[in-house]
Length: 119
Image (cartoon, rainbow, N blue to C red; front, side, top):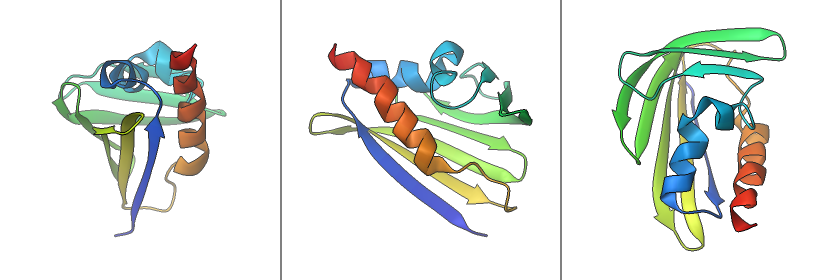
């Protein structure tokens, strides 16, 4: 099973970083066109991006630190860690199929969204 690991340091505190990865309106700024999501265990997840719909379920939530969800044939963990100059966002995706999200462009978009924290 292929594993994808990516990370980026966001120039904002952990509280703001948590908002960026848990609030649908924020997720729609960097992850997808439409996001239906609640950061609660067993909550459904629905993401529409570029006409493609992905559905899943939230498996684990540790407030301010970690979210794990399954969508399609992938299991994804998002983690936050303190870092010099901000908060490190780490994504780990265990792919059970070859249709996973391309995380590089998504992390660049998240980094751009978090840069607004400096304003």
